[in-house]
Length: 243
Image (tube, rainbow, N blue to C red; front, side, top):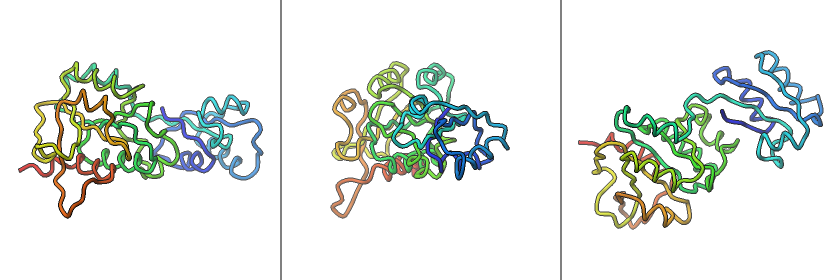
């Protein structure tokens, strides 16, 4: 379940018939007129429960008291799951291609990554609560609403998550300019994770040290690096380049 906050994002979510809304949360201090009235009317028309809270209680629900505007909604996302539950079934799954997000701090980048990964051949997106941008309104907007149906794998912190995957035989790949093997030449033996690093600092040292395979993206014209969301798109569609 994903909790979305903010008056306009909540109203848009309630107006989307394709989304299953579990409950609407409102602060008692809200004025009844305007968009709050529209939210209540829309929730009632869809038989979505409305729960009233103090301002402090709502801030704990939204986890962003400064920007929630006294409104939040719980949305059921059927493809969200914990990484812990996911790896328990890895042995029975066909070869998996996963993306792991290492401190992607820009919400626009995160949203575009999620959109490309969901559209391409990526089976899961590992999002850790520590270091990454929150899955909030800016990410939803940048993903063009794709976040709600994205295969998000939730975990507390990425290094521990990658080690957990390696125990189950998953290959961990990072992007490195000096790597001899190209992303488009790489053929995983079975399950594989591609790690996307921070926009400024790249992949963290702790992640680089535990990675199994460095890969490069061929570039011409003296270009040294690509935007992380562009890199995610190349990874998501890399299998289409197989010969």
